[in-house]
Image (cartoon, rainbow, N blue to C red; front, side, top):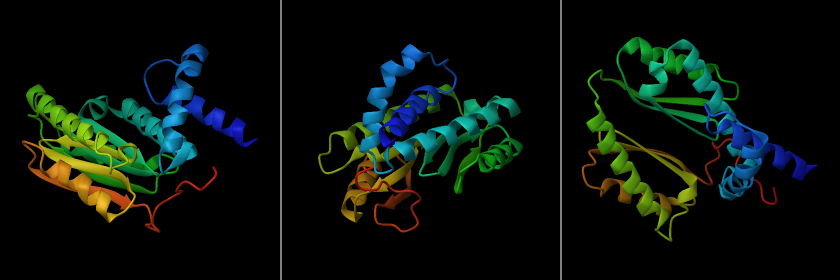
Length: 208
């Protein structure tokens, strides 16, 4: 029974993660195994990763129906049912809509609004931010004292947002240090929770 549930969860991840790309049985079968292994290694586990993916898909769908600018201007991260919104939108009304629709998704326990209004954010800004995020993620990946799979990094206008679960304070300090010491970073915003934080929703149980 548990194995069947995990197989179903893996297929859900394979189909829901791309959001826009159609999911064929062959495509799902090809990617589900790899995604299941990756998700199962995270602190939130396979079931938690699947739940977060479904929440993300529901929010993206609601945004798409409301205004496509929400999808192009907003970065959406979901971890243990906590939703982090970052990015820059053209007007305050769009920010309000993004937050409201995020709260309406089933299962959401928190919406962290880090959106800003900036109609002038251009491709150059986005490219620079992407390069910063890539460098930080690469450094976390190759740091043997950090379980990088448990972290998500986003960068908007040289501000770094970090979300996820840290094994302990020492690991978290290393993660934040990598972010702060990356070239061109202006500020680092920490939304990480410690593994032992009782406020966490649905942490992975041993043997699941």
